[in-house]
Length: 135
Length: 98
Image 1 (tube, rainbow over the protein chains, first blue to last red):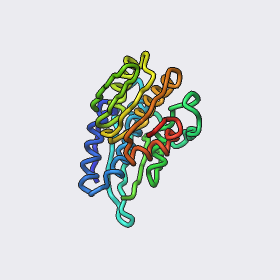
Image 2: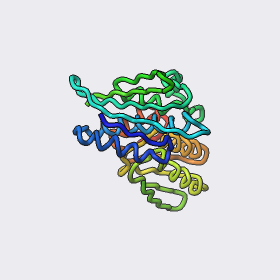
Image 3: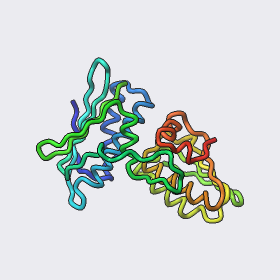
């Protein structure tokens, strides 16, 4: 397992993606799967950076590991910010017209739709969000 | 992300090259805010775009709302992977994709 501890700042997004992409490339991940995982990582990390500690600052830990049978990558995001379960956010209505469309909640909705499993727990004062994607 | 702009009368084509994400979406938003005045036909060429996250979708929605009031907006040359993102989020119904 590889772990990146980093300040939860939106400006660190490229570093987080570089860390995850390096692992995915070493696993021989398909480009489409890698794009879906990158999007999920972006949506989750940007959420943590924007809301977990606001207006204070804090850090996040991102770990990447693989499981076999079925072959999958498991990425876990841990932060010590305010308890927040993004999975409880209601799904946006994706059938509304442009004028009525609300953009909030679309990011986590994309994560739920593109990953094989997404779980949240609050443990020992930390938010722990885990995504699993088969490849 | 690189943004290439081509103006022809009241038509504007913007070609996106790279990733439309949290970091780069503000670039496109600034371009839209400054360039859409008086534009009737707006084309976004996505041939070289490889990635769109929700931050990018938000800006595309903003552009579509502006163009709904003053003309038309068309998205061209969308890759299969990005088309799937549009489908999952219902954006395939909001945007005109050629």
